[in-house]
Image 1 (cartoon, helix red, strand yellow):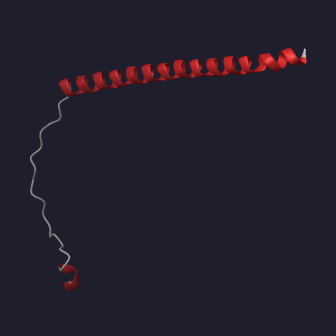
Image 2 (cartoon, rainbow, N blue to C red):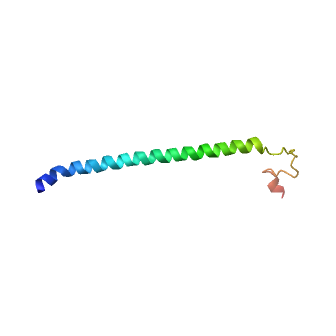
Length: 76
């Protein structure tokens, strides 16, 4: 019995490793599929938002104030 078990053990371990690898690939595929689906939904929502809710155009006013240059620090 011990001899038979020692001959079968590598095959059992190999089977478990192959099963775990296949499960990992399937899990990765599902995660990628779910991520792509969420990305497409967010993309569609953003396009709908851009289409129907365009932001109002604002007039850019020149900023008032003084730009402090590196040489002006000595004067302050």
